Length: 348
Image 1 (cartoon, one colour):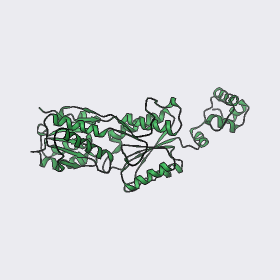
Image 2 (tube, helix red, strand yellow):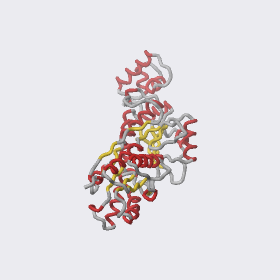
Image 3 (cartoon, rainbow, N blue to C red):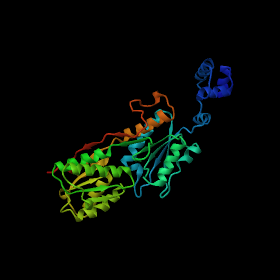
Image 4 (cartoon, rainbow, N blue to C red):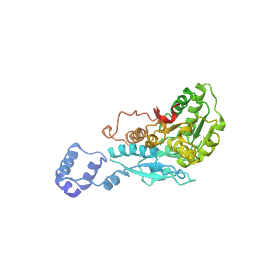
């Protein structure tokens, strides 16, 4: 493998000039740039990723912060695996690596430290919570000019770059599907209220019920933590009221399937189940018994969009390395959801 010195000797320039040309640093005469490129191509010289990152004062890493969810295996969750795949696809296309980081339970993430220590060049944040510590940390990131994008969380008072899906409409579609068939006592198993997604799903439920001339019954509002186990635990409440609950809408498929499992554990047969609608349209929805109706969320496309926006707008990538079909506005962007109907929610 050729060395940088050999490229410099062949081009008749210094090694420092070779480094500046190949790393795009500083003004360079076009003739000099051409000589260095030709020499490097002739010798087959490829600078190392480490050398490039030092020359540019960049890490070459796109950071992804994942939330702490008790008793949930994040990488087996459709939600995270799809979004990470979309993010990773765009990072790969732009020559960046992913640095995946996990939150510490009970602590606010020190985002600015990631940039100050040059661990990441930009950061995608999943699982941000609506609390003062989190908001302060994000505001500091913005004040210092660090590029970041928030996914699946919204802060009404801020103008952060955000990518999400239209969860209000997705939940409204689910409730309308159930009420049109005549279901009236619909239990809603939501996630923690500290996530804006949970608040938006509840808003969609309220709109859907109001459109059907119904009001929210607070006794039918249940809370889990988006894990299957929390669905199993909610099944106890649902089973005790099965004579009146005729449908269940869960804020993700894992909780919906958990409720199904919990009902089976209590000896309730599938034919005696209430109607079920989940959320996410994960692979598991099709394999559930009965197959689970679910709101489809474009997680992969959301990951692609978040990465593309950061790389294109904040890191100055060329348009050839990103998908320019995505809009370039920095305001919050919502992608559409779609209800997929299967046997679990069809009245016989």
